[in-house]
Image (cartoon, rainbow over all chains, first blue to last red; front, top):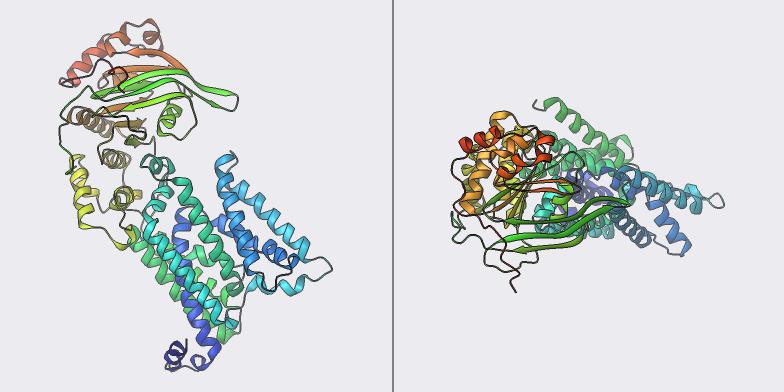
Length: 276
Length: 274
């Protein structure tokens, strides 16, 4: 960490001299990489709404943490998110209702339950930090968690990328090639749930999904094969992440939301440049 | 295809059997008491009206829907694999045309453990290009799936379905949305596969006159099996004639269109091998 800080301090900028910005820069780079990699699979799997629901379920996770008397609700949030992700993935296969109906039902329930518990006695305001996040107060343990998630995601990319790609194209065709469709879907859903939960405190639950979806959606417009797709998503995510962090420093705005604006600019320009 | 002989040595040994297969969705019985044998080297056309359960039958064979009755497979070496190798070409591959997958990525997804986002192994590339070549699709290897025409996509999917050579090949209305030229090219290739690889091919179609030219056997289902026999018998069958307006001229087209019958077709499944 100190080596990283010394390295950033070499940059000829005023902001690069502050410890909180040095931490934030590393956190942005890690989270951008994580979001790009997960988002690339997420968008292919048409799971954008799914991860949105996971983000909103954080309310219930926090509420659980409060009810159980935990000082740090992170574990309660992660546990609840994983259970919800597993339930939604399995239920998608069982019910004949369309995906978005099932997800919408779960999301509304999770938000309502969380808000009911947290608003009891009028104390909801102290949880609003989770809505917009705070990247500038990131601490080394947060960065360590992001690093662990990147390693897990890279492991997933090494072991299950091809299968996931195939399932996202057509589950029947993938099943005929002996791919365990449910297992792949479940493993990915759990990974997304944990990553979203860990990131919420940094970027806020209102925009976490945009950070997952936008780089991949941009890359989809530009790429004709998966190598280029993943590469473009990572580049877009890193560029908008770093640009958004620096802009938020000068504009004194919420970092997560500022990053989204830059990612959105990338997405719009990819639409304009798109081949017919 | 480099790993497998072009012509399978023995034939007549392999066989897939459905015994009293039934499928229900809730209270709705979709398939009832379906008993069929599929022999290798034989192209069986499965026909029937919309909602007859044709696609459901394929999904039962694929193991996607729970079913009553039994499914047995006997491979070429007369073993009974629990999970046979199934080649499958879906009716119409529904996907977002902006999907960032090239044809090679698709082959990598099916055949390689090397993650496709790191690029493709030379070995995979050669193998895919060799198979695509046989289906007049070698030039499509680097193209994005969304930029293939209907006929090109079906040839790519057929190439994928026979890599590796399966025990049974399932084709679910594989030429819907393909133009006439593409359709004939596709059927010619399927017909050729049957002879070269001694495959059992199950082809779902609602267009009987078209498949008459290529099929060795016609199975007509509408919830249950209503007809099962060679095309010659189909034209003599009262119900088939009425339903499809068949007459003997279809047989003449057939013989003109497909002179070389498979060298050997197993007339019966070998009775229950241990």
